[in-house]
Length: 133
Image (cartoon, rainbow, N blue to C red):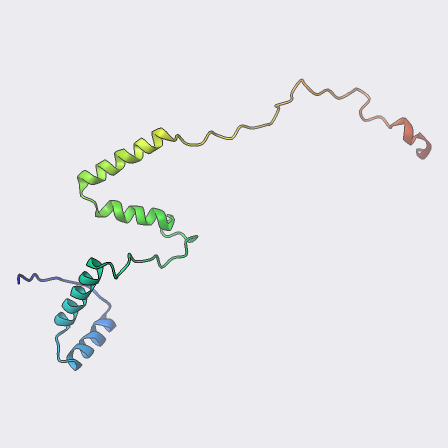
């Protein structure tokens, strides 16, 4: 079996505790990490492990982006550059099929010159003359 060296960066406290428990089991930390990754690989291959769920509420934003946007960004970054270009072109195609919604039209002045107010609009009504001084 060919093996490669992997460098990881983890919290110092976690490293110390994991190393302590590994030694207690009679294994090296590297062996435990290899076992963990092997187990993860096989569970993933058999469909036992689902895709990770977001640790953020669906309404929260991270770095100014929604969880969906973050997921899309993660997927995009994992693609080969040729696939990134293909995904970009597909996005442009979708935009061309369904252009952005029409801009809201202001209703200000829509009835100009269609509604007239009489000259005596501010004058008191005849029915209220009995109540006026």
